[in-house]
Image 1 (cartoon, rainbow, N blue to C red):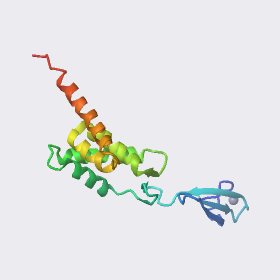
Image 2: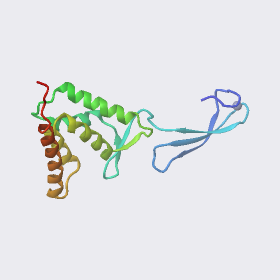
Image 3: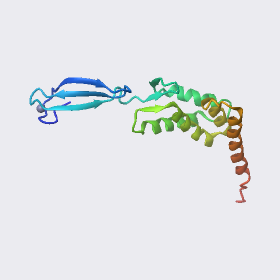
Image 4: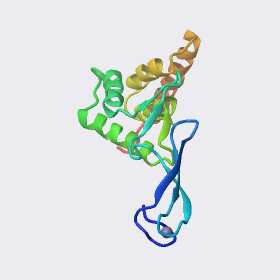
Length: 162
Ligand SMILES: [Zn+2]
């Protein structure tokens, strides 16, 4: 961290303050050579994505956990390891591409279910039934109906290419 004014290499920190949500550290610095004062903002563990869970607890993003959730959903389904890996990669990079290092677990749930829906309908239903934690059986059935309707639409579009 060089002084933006004179380029001196050892500005000293005169004040440190952590933002209320704990994601940013603000440091007031003063150059020892020219006395220029400036402020820097740092995010601890810049590269590590943090996940805010439904209960408000923040924990580091865990790829293994994400994969385990998807693995459970696709269990005994015709979904290859490679497909799961691609899904996880895809979701992880979508998360990493976001401006913020703090994402909600419900956003991750959305990303996973959107993709699973195209991969395997049963896996999708299994996944949303866990992550959405439907409070009413009706909600679950509505979701199921929506998926089954889409399935029927697929069958109603016959392939005339022969
Ligand atoms: Zn300076």
